[in-house]
Length: 243
Image (cartoon, rainbow, N blue to C red; front, side, top):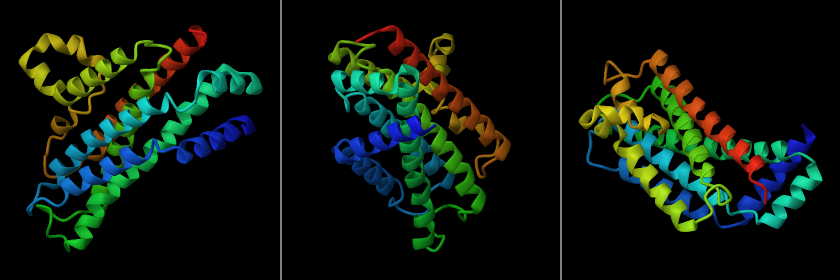
């Protein structure tokens, strides 16, 4: 446990001393500002669904950029020091989980602040405690799935940098248009199941005017399974593909 904690502290210092967090943070704030400064009233559910997609994409960017934070020599030295590849790679997954929590908290607080500032006149209905709770769960699971997916595009797994960027672009398109593509071509559901169902959140709620906790817990669990699967695949591949 102490080894994992030490690795997390090291990664925290390395990440926040770099400038890699600046642009994702700026874009996250700009996108949240764009959502919640549109002419009122706006649909509360629709705005949160849109925020889920943006949060997923920003987290994917964070996971992708984090892959290049440590050079190969530095990674090898850390692995030799902790004497476990699994612990080292697991610490990265845990740190991305922490970053996902920060990203999702920012996204969840944004509509709350907007509702308070507008004195509950911004949305088509009052922003309630259940809205904050359910949106936080959705945003956190979306961020976890996004950061894990971005982290899976590791330079040792995909050696061509151009191919990494191209793959990331395709994943962005497929993630955003997954629902529409499956509706148009039903056979794609057998292919696009590997993409986290972030776009499917919009159709998951039987009543579009309120969040259902059972549905939210189901989506939360599904997206965390995707995040765990992506992380496990990445760790397995990196352990197999040596430096």
